[in-house]
Image (tube, rainbow, N blue to C red; front, side):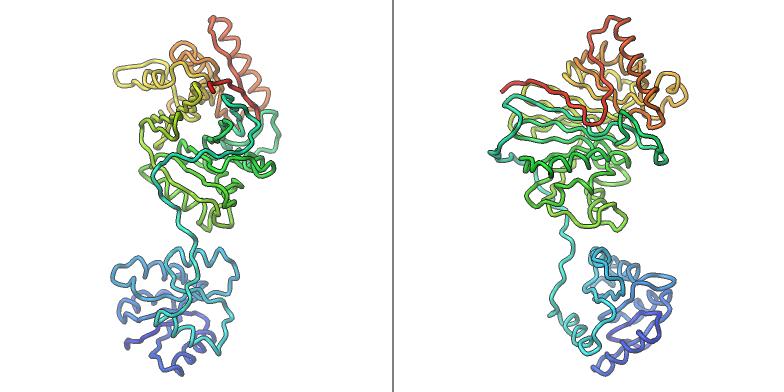
Length: 441
């Protein structure tokens, strides 16, 4: 194939030939590829200065061609114009995200087409902004925001916005306990901390937006990246408000990093949100360790007994200790090869609130043992005997359970506490259940 300055890739003969003729008349050497499957071999052979490619083509799409060019070290300097009849901003975002130099909307102006191409080749074309990247910053002390709060100094409000597991199909029944997946908020009169971003976080976002809540800096701590723990993140309304700073915390997994999860949530065409965030997003990739997020506020993390790199969190502030472990299997019997129970009990010791996985009633746990979730009785015994916590919140209950099943679980837990003489408060929360804690000023 003769070397050309410009390669046009378009399966529509009329559009492809018109584009070629316009550029030939402007003095360029131009080649036309109508079979997209032949495009990459031709690009590698001729090394054009610029590629003009349609998006929708049989075989391989224009976005696939653009991505292949821009990720190849030997081809990445070739400029790529993506042409499409799709009017969607999301399609433009996808093109720029994979490295396109310009996005041209069909039908384009035949009188200015060659001038546009010339400006791109010589670098004088105005740059269409790509979606802003997720920002990476080092943890720092936040300035205290002086605004009105409905909480007094020393008060903490813990709200459960969602606590159910994710069903494999959308339930047709309502529930007094709710159907939303994992999300818990902890608020002081200055700060807001959120644990997990399941579907429950959507209602929390609406609450913040409706009442113009005063938190300008929000901390979101993800335990892991299973869908029921991140499904609501892209539709958390403060994400769309430039007045907020969102600090996203989590542990990288072997299969996916925290940054990749954020990119997929906010910018992927497959995400549930349709616009990039306007808030400032900071990423904090953490390990099993202790972190001072702010003066007097400590966040600790330990790896959970659950598939993937899952975390259990401990938040210590105003003299109170809150432990959150929605996906964590307590074994009940430690062995020389299994010390998770002892490690978790040391981590959770004397917690004021212990929100922990109690996915299954005892009879069902026998069929689901060693899948990463705990049984009711094991969780109750652990909380009372080993961790010696004050309040146990039964969390991440199976989405297959009816209200009657959940009522029976709570009754069984309270009967066990009474029979064994435990000093333990036990709760199975409904959505928007609020617990108030009085800490130190």
